[in-house]
Length: 117
Image 1 (cartoon, helix red, strand yellow):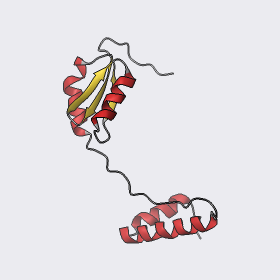
Image 2 (cartoon, helix red, strand yellow):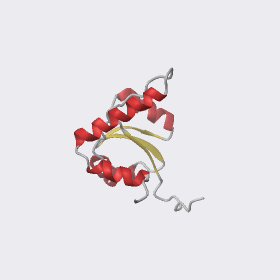
Image 3 (tube, helix red, strand yellow):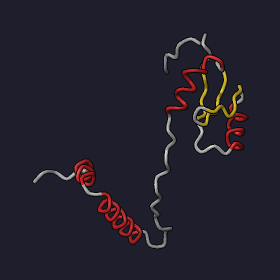
Image 4 (tube, helix red, strand yellow):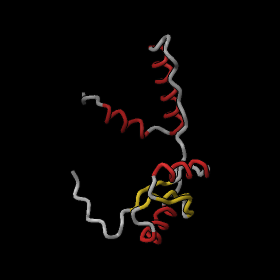
């Protein structure tokens, strides 16, 4: 009999139809909650949808050279905020209310290449 590993189980689970995967998840959560008497129950949450990264990537290709040495906050192809103070850029992005904005630092054009640690 072949050895049972997490990887072999996951491979089998991936073969199940979606409704059976959800049934398995509910069963496992129920069993886990039964073993955790007195603890807060484990709850399943639907995964969040991830925004399309292509508009962000396109904006960075087209405009990164204009914002070297700064933090930028993007909502797709829309610039929310930019500046050298990351806290201010993060605060502006939060205040804007954009859903999962991309906030990143743009290296100056003349910066030496990163060599790692």
